[in-house]
Image 1 (spheres, rainbow, N blue to C red):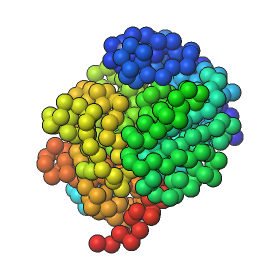
Image 2: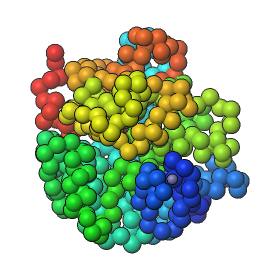
Image 3: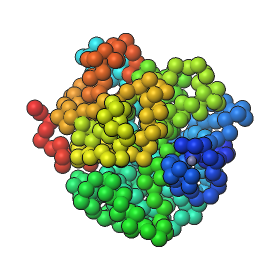
Length: 400
Ligand SMILES: *Cc1c(COP(=O)(O)O)cnc(C)c1O
Ligand SMILES: [Zn+2]
């Protein structure tokens, strides 16, 4: 029986990610009023808390870390069993490429088929706790499906705005959850503009990536799980497909929190974090490489990896900071490369990964070829979704 003993949240305040100004964590907040950038949640990490006291091991979901999560009252928890996904060794693929230790955390096993379930479970729980009337989201696909599912579960209305070119499977699943779906010609940024129009009166909570502080808290649980599942020894390198970047920022936030808690040593070697993008839409790579001052005028094109079709990520500065602090890097992968990665993971390991996850593997191959990655290093790939909903776009491409 999965009955979690309610854990008392150590949430204390929120702060502006640019200037540090503090905000109340007990009122409904969006972006910071001072700098119009994401707000970040802070916890009391000073009071003693051991993993044994801080982790509810009876709960095989991301909610096992309740003490370090922002929900104050368990009665508002909206869960479908998200998180605590397996970390799988990839011995055949690793041996084929001369790798000592190749691992994959399979987020495709989450409810609604992607790691978006973590963020939206958290955001919808907080929306319910804070008494909002409904939620609205611009999405490349997976976030909309997750919002629709968790809002249905919470009894809240959901409006999902997605590009018209999104594969039908994403739209269809939203309909089955009873969401209102709006289709827009363009990318997620155009959907964002439509959301602002539809929600001009502000009646609904806009749960766009990093425009409220709690999806990030759901995503950060991947970092806690990685540490716990690997016995508090982190891998040398972690590769993650970055669109809006909440996973990258959240996992790094978790590592820092665990250092503050003493769950990881203060001088523990943290992984080098690699952000993987699509060649068709790689604003972070362009800024990182110094070819543009920031992403605000970047022109992206659609990609098979629709989770990566985010031309203007609000969290760009936060992602760049993670790359700097972790001595990481950015890599972009072609559409053909993603298909090749899907074939290889499918045929060598029996994994049907989303193009985003395939891009992550191909990025590892690229970094091995340049020597940035060493064959003896422990490499953790984040596969963020299942390929099921992408079938219409990859059908017939299983052979070259
Ligand atoms: C949304 C999404 C991403 C990108 O996640 P961010 O947190 O926006 O960086 C990667 N992969 C999949 C499958 C996604 O749905
Ligand atoms: Zn500020």
